[in-house]
Length: 284
Image 1 (tube, rainbow, N blue to C red):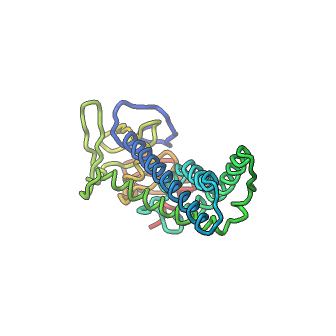
Image 2 (image 1 turned 90 degrees about the vertical axis):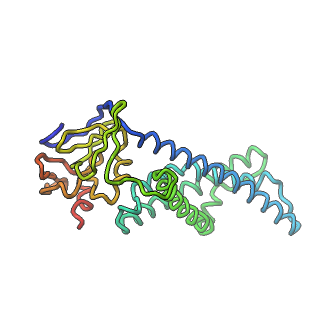
Image 3 (image 1 turned 135 degrees about the vertical axis):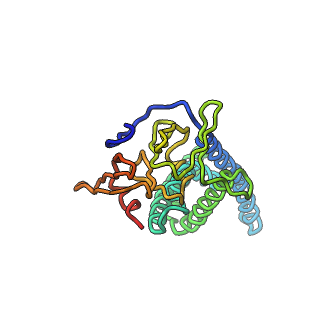
């Protein structure tokens, strides 16, 4: 619904768009590809180191064994990489409160760690079985202190590199800061530059978002998460899984007994807010 009234979720696509979703997904895929190449290099390097170290102490080992140890670990971590990227987008350092950021990443890390050591052990056991050997599938889980010391720095490094990578790609690979005061919205051959301060709220609309402003609404090809990330630090806050609002456009917030709330805008109209997003909106 446009204008006044409580807004409902919609999935209707539009005709105008921009490069945000396409380029964002492409950048994420490139990040995963770089991580995969790095993981392959680490696997080869560590495997050769183990073989050489064992040979030096008179305990030679077939190369396939350390290759399985390192390879299964890297493969599982690569499969879990999108989860780390998702958590980083949800708790972006420039906009998330420190406590909230730490809680999200701690929960994500612990979940990833448990999946990593469990699946890694099962994969090793299966591969050893095919080779006519044995491997205790719960061995990595039993060695959890060691595995934890290995996984924690990796998780932190991935988060930091992903943040740096995203910022670098968003700026076009240059040190020049992008124009954060305007959004470029494409409508066929036309390009419309919308001042950020003119946008009152933003609503998800399938593969698009709808930019609501006094001059009228515009459809922009982007995800709401991408818009939230792009507008970090620009007075926008999420109030629902499908909408963002500019704080300075809010006239009143009315909380319901359920914990959900209604946002009344200075220019008229009401937006429904979900209780899980009430605290960020009300924070000073």
